[in-house]
Image (cartoon, rainbow, N blue to C red):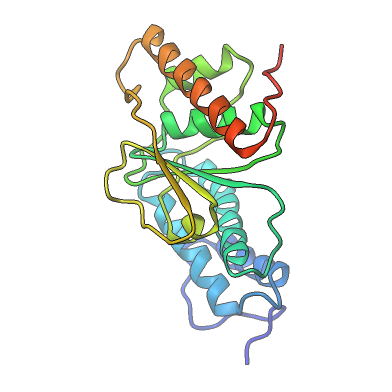
Length: 221
């Protein structure tokens, strides 16, 4: 039997760091998930990001973050990990604009009183540069954000799922609140129009926080 501290035979790792990551996460989630589940999540997360990765240097860090977050979400969905904060998932097609802005605004305006994830049904290679600029103008840094594919585990972990242009790609689970925000896709828009989308998302986020009983904290000066 394979132990969490030993070798993990039977899988071929395309990158050596993935083997180390799987071993580290198997220890982190010991008693929650078996080694095989952790291995599978690490490799699925890597291949999911590899399809759209343009800068290989970022793939290591992003795979670690993505695999860890997915396993955390699965543990929350199974009740093996406490989730004291409201869980909100934002989904758009490319996870390069609207859903990224909504996630960053929700985290900032709630004062981290809401746990946020975002994903895309067909993720882009990178965030829209105009979106990054528009968010930077209001003090929010998206330089470490990256498009992520929509996975079943993050939907299961969410209390509220908010879609914006992803069509029927998002799975539906009972007991969750589903909303759809009809927002203009900022792709290929000039920065002036991206700012308008950003401001509409902010208004939507503030209204959502009110329904959750979370007071808006404002943005950095």
